[in-house]
Amino acid sequence: QVQLVESGGGSVQAGGSLTLSCVASGFYHSNYLMAWFRQAPGEEREGVASIDSDDKITYADSVKGRFTISRDHAKNTLYLQMNSVKPEDTAMYYCAADRSGITYCQGGHCFEATRYNSWGQGTQVTVSS
Image (cartoon, rainbow, N blue to C red):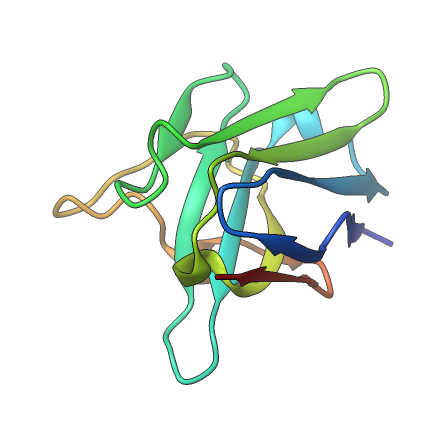
């Protein structure tokens, strides 16, 4: 019954902005660790940003200063505001949820995909030069 549905992807020119949304149903996402992951063709899935039940936020180094993760508790919706996008941001972006609700980091890595038990279908972001 848990569902995550992403939207907001599309094509944008380098330097532009885009906002992704993830609507959660079947659970109250404020109690979860929520995250955005992305995967480019031929590349491994990587964590982008996360926000936990205490609203602690973690960003990947590659997006710090450019992306902002947030949530609307009333709408049960997660957002990723993407500013100053680069061609290397091109990827399928996935919303994910971890019922533990707590940010965790191991060996300097703060995004462990296997810990997330719910995933959306993804939304494609393509950044042109």
